Each structure stands twice: as structure tokens, then as C-alpha cells.
Length: 199
Image 1 (cartoon, rainbow, N blue to C red):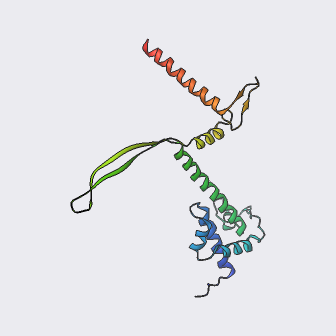
Image 2 (image 1 turned 90 degrees about the vertical axis):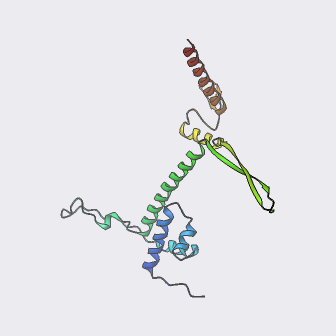
Image 3 (image 1 turned 120 degrees about the vertical axis):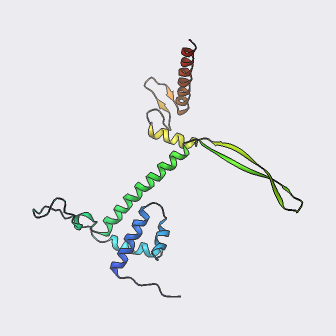
């Protein structure tokens, strides 16, 4: 078995930075990112610990009068240390995961309609199955009730809460009460509209 390649300090830091950047996309587990660059997760953790110990440097300002306003100095636009780059990658990953989570939440809060196909076959004279017809059934998947409740308690916490809500009047209102009141309001408005149309 060939020996593992040896890397100098600069190469090691470059690899762990690249791994953090790939991991920051939110598309790959950290182990997959390590495999992509040819090292094990154990090695990555050791190198990560090594470069995380490097003291952070303060960003150098561009207060010199000889510098133009649109002058892009690498010392001010790029992280000074590995720790800074790691923090930046971590923030990027959080944002990426947040967007993916919101997209998934929106999907599961929508009504999903789809077709399910079933082949009806018979055995032919040659002993092989022959498709006689295909039955198509339209199906409907309702929004996930737990995710719906989670969304309501976060986007409208004043009206939808996990725990019971005690009003100043002493009345106890639960999430079920609020849902039923909302349904009654909708039905009342629909009846009023129907009455106006009949007139």
C-alpha cells in the first residue's frame, strides 16, 4: 500500500480551507468533503485544530491618503487567519442550510397532487406477461400538520402558541380554539357573501 502523501504547513492549511469552503455550501457532509481532497476526517480534525490555534490578526485599515477609495487591498478583503476563514465559511453554511430548510418547509406546507400508475398484466400464450391496461389514480397529499403548526407558532406567535394562552379576561385559548374560530369566521363570511348574491 503506497504511503500517504506528506504535506508542508502551507499545503495543509490550503487543504483545510478548501474543505471548509466546500462544506460551507451545505450540500455535502464533512466526511465527503475530506474524501474529495484525499484526507481522512481524523486528519482534517488534527489540521483544523493546528491552524485554529493561530492568533487572529486585526484587520489593517486603509487610512493612508495615498490609497484610492476603490483600491482593493487583499489585506482588508481576505481573512487574515484560518480561524477567520473558518468563521466565514460557517456563516455561509448556516445561510445555505437556512435557505434549504425554508424551501423544504414550503414544499411540505403545500398540497401535493400526483398520479400513481399501476400496470394490469396477464400471462400470454408464450408464458410471458403482457400489459393489458394501465390504471391511473390521482392522489392528493395534504400538508404536514406538525409542520403547519410549527410554522404558525413561529410566523404568528401572538395568535398561535404551543402552550395555552390566557387572556386578561381569564379566558384560556388553545391552538385548537383559534383554528375553530378562524373556520367559523370564514364560514360566516361565506354565508354573508352568499346572502348578498341571492338578493
